[in-house]
Image (cartoon, rainbow, N blue to C red; front, side, top):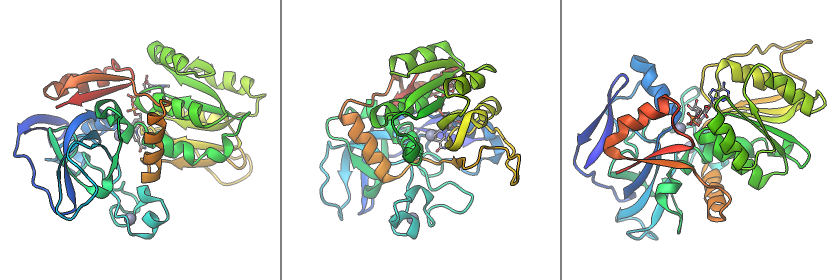
Length: 345
Ligand code: NAD
Ligand code: ZN
Ligand code: ZN
């Protein structure tokens, strides 16, 4: 079968490799689609610093059950499935408490938890081996359309769920970056909260998409944006800010507009910084609650699937044949993708 491998710092290659064997608790998934995440670009840019080489890329995958491990029941060939982005142990205290994206066993204090395509072989291949507990059935959803839900849907769902107590009707939520994650985060906010949604991006096509997806106010992400958001909120600020970019200008914007007691969720990994000091004249309003959010849980994944099945969450996709992976990555890098690029084996 064909698979896209990360072979050396910044370099991927299409290789012909044997279809993998499965163990008793594993399923062989025939991949329908694999989404390209901006995090894949961060990995390519990390060069020598990235610790895992030789694995198949792709942490957003969906497909159909091809073969079922001998110890498993309840799966049939042809079932459409979504592959979890976090491969947690399922047994540790964090997992049992429903914080499986903070697994104590398949992760560590400062590392991210085990994630397919970022270590173990991922979805940019014709077939992928997955333990049954990392799969959810998606029924009639098209697995090509659904593939990006695994990360670009689940990750915003997790960030939004963690801020849900502030997202009451009458609140204001700010979404920065209407890319793969942001365009789904916006729809999740719209479908599951009564918040007024302010969407920002630097690119006009993304702003147009935000308008079409029902944002209440769409703003260019520029130096005037923070004051405009404060003006819109009686100078009090936004109840929740979701930064799906994380570069210095968006971190500055997010910290400039968060309200007292507001929920600040950094999801984008753009390397931005802000001062956080403890004392009077502090960097953030009193009570502001900050999280650097990683992926999501199985519960978040079930919620994302349910919303998609209800027709309330749709992924904008651009398809590329697997063999054209480099073109897809080049288009993502150049900002030519609106929504998500999906490789089709
Ligand atoms: P993407 O390339 O699809 O979208 C990025 C969007 O940000 C684009 O629409 C772009 O126009 C916009 N943008 C760029 N600069 C901006 C600015 N200054 N202000 C406003 N908008 C701006 O990327 P993606 O796949 O959605 O990923 C977004 C970020 O989230 C990346 O940094 C990625 O690594 C990260 N990510 C984190 C997690 C996690 O678990 N924390 C999971 C997935 C992705
Ligand atoms: Zn990702
Ligand atoms: Zn665990």
